[in-house]
Image (cartoon, rainbow, N blue to C red; front, side, top):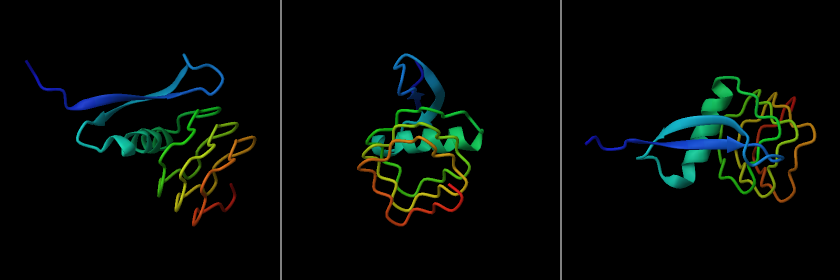
Length: 108
């Protein structure tokens, strides 16, 4: 029997909780609080469409989200301190209560 070394992290639509926008296999050794961030950065690196993603209360501190399509995404209460959102599409994104201290927002 082989030991599980990854865990599947799904990024879901804020409008349809059954719709997976992106799924990634994340190393199980990564602290659970950082797994969504890792999956999101992988999604962005692969130019995944994250329009309307539900990232409410996500820990995304320092995340590299340059050029991400986060149109209409739910980022309420997300920790985006120091995140790089340059060139990201945040049109219609819900940012109430999100911490954007030190975030790079040029052309976002």
